[in-house]
Length: 347
Image (cartoon, rainbow, N blue to C red; front, side, top):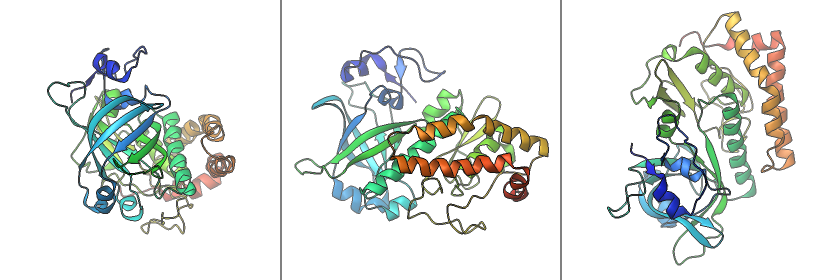
C-alpha cells in the first residue's frame, strides 16, 4: 500500500503541526489516512452521498460515491472523493442507519495527495436516538480500554459525523461516531502484515497475546467472536509470531445494546453473562495472566470513570461491570469456577 504524502496533505488540510510517524515502517514524510485524521482535534466530518440508496441497499454492500469533508467551523479543511458502503452483519440488518465502511481511493492524476485504496470502518449511531449514541460511546470506550491493555489492538478516533444529501436537510443524521484504524495501518505500526488465509488452529497464535485477548473479551462479556471463522477478528503476521486482534464489541455485556442476544453455543442466559473462550493452560500460566490484568485494574477503572463523553450513570454502570471481573480474578475459587474450568480443551 502506498502512503499519503504528508507535505501535500498538510497543504490541503491546513495542518502545520510537527509530524510524528505512526508506524515503524513509515518514512518520516509519509502518513496513512487514519494517521491523518488523528491530527484533527476535534474531528468534524461531513459525508455527502445518496442517503436513500445507502439505507435502502444496506443489505447488498454496494459501494457508492460520496464526498468526504473535514470541517473547521464553517470552512472545509480537507475534501476527498470517497466511496461508502454499509458494513457489519447484525447491525446492517437491524439498524435503521447502518455502520459504514469508507474507501479512500486514488485520486485523479493531477491530485496525488491520497493513497491507493485504503478502507476505514466507521461506527455510527444505529438509529439516532440518545441511547443508541450512548452505545456507540460505550463501544468506543472499550477500544480505548483495550489500547491500555495492549498495543496490539486497533486504535480509534472519535468524530462528529453528519451524513448529508446535497440539496436536502439531513441534520438529524449527525452523531458521535468513531473511525477504526485499518488492518493495514495496524499491521504496519506493529511491523507486520495482515494474514488473509484462515488460521487452522488457535494454537498457532502467540499464546501470551491470544490469552490476553481472550481474557479481555471475557472482561467485557463478549462471546461474539471466533478466530477460526474470522468473525470480529483480524489475524496479523509479525516477524516472530502470529496474533489475533479483536474488533466490534457491540454484542458485549459492557455495551448492553438491546439488539444483542446471547450466543446459543454457550451456556449463558444474557449477554451480561461472562463466558471464557480461551485455551486451557497451566496454573502458573493462568496466574501470570491474572496478575497482568490486575496490574491494569487501576488504569482501566480510572479511564472508565473519567470518560466524560459518557453520562455519569453510564460510566458508573460500566465500572461496576468491570469491577466484578477484577473481583473474580482476586478470588481463586471464583477464578477457577468461572474461567479455568470453562477453558476450551478442544482448540
